Length: 326
Length: 298
Image 1: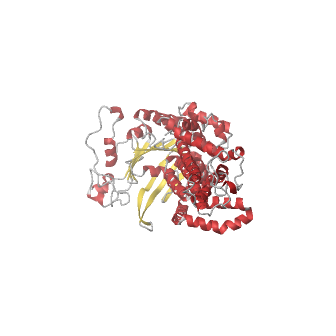
Image 2 (image 1 turned 45 degrees about the vertical axis):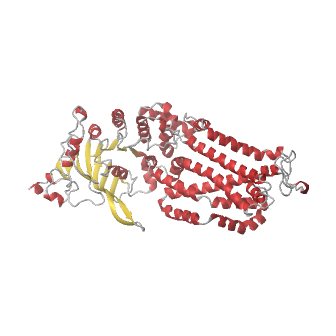
Image 3 (image 1 turned 120 degrees about the vertical axis):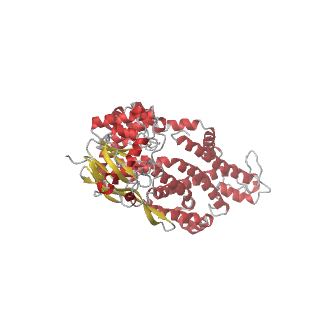
């Protein structure tokens, strides 16, 4: 098989917790804790999980916008942690990002045209006329009227703004786009349009997406494979249409409304109770044990490792470990 | 700002600002008043050709008359002519000292807010300056350097630079603090992360994304800065530590007239009123500018 486009090896990001007058480090928030995964070329890998599970940090660390505490990120064979600033800058055009809130990801004092032209200005050295032509082309590609070029983000709707940030991300023909909750801040009626646009662009330009979302419907629609995160770790990684193997995935799936069957709302009874444990002091054993409906004695002692349960399907749960079940 | 921007079919960046400013009556009144003051001090002395330094012992302490519309001072000098010439210096000091103070404050604030490593050092420096009693420091500065600068650059230029520099160097701290706080919140915004993802280097992130977004607090600081600098210059002159006695500034004129406050209150009121009007007009203008420059049109 061809080399994957993006490879995360035991990626860990800890945020130090400082206290007191001398700002001593008293602990660390384990935002991402030893995550390994790979993204193949042309694939969409969904990352799902609750708020605070580390999925946004994972996306930023994958682009080296956040320095990992340990572990490696390989993009197209290059170790992003081993190269200097100049080489990283040269790779930037191929690694782009789309953010959750298009109102916050666009500079309010920059017109739409200049926002989309910024990557061109930084990396191409093209004359202004050629940049302008490319901006117009990109706006057309994402379904924006080119007359909006001179407008400020505040004058646009949420959907239009998200199209602007997509156009900016596409400007340098990237290979990988990290989509951090790209539709979460949009009206439901706009979401489908943006998802369709992302799908269409992927088909036309051969993009790979790391698609971060808590919206299982969007992930089901767009992703080829899904990684489920809980408290900084991956608990399950498998094809999008496989039956959930981890109780947490099952609970997530059960609580998500089915887009095909919207007349029947999600069960009123919440499948999960309680909150996430603190990522600054994760429990011994399985992090999910405190909320798991199928918890066993071993779960509170030993943390389960991610193990293969079928071809291309891995889960971190003692339920799938024959030794533990016995 | 860039070549690309020139060719892209953009609306003028300044037209909407002007449109919004035009709808703001307080700002327009402030602008008109400030323009009026500028005309008064720049063109006034050309039209009213009375020598503000001419001493006339026979006409001391005169009330308003045709020859002297605002009267004369204790040496018989024409008050109107002195107000005009004095205003030039006062306004120049106010604007120049503000530029130094706000420029320095913005620089320190952006550096401290954007680069975490510099934050501690720069903010302790700011605290240090804030903790010092400013007026005594100014007096010491003026006392120490007055002779040296006057000897090297000539009395008028030397004192002007000294006063402007001293006021500028002691009035940047509040701007620095406000700008730093704004830059720190801006830094967490996604559009800065987006620029980093593009590979925009820090200095262009600062000029392109940070500075335009801290414009509002900087303009507010600037308008307050003009007012503050005029006040400090007045205070210095009033204490006799600013410009030499024969140079009329509005503050100096108040100082000279205070002894005669009982008999001739007009001689304090006129320059005092001009100081107040300047401060007021700049504040209104600045507040209107700040609102007009906000693309959200608030």
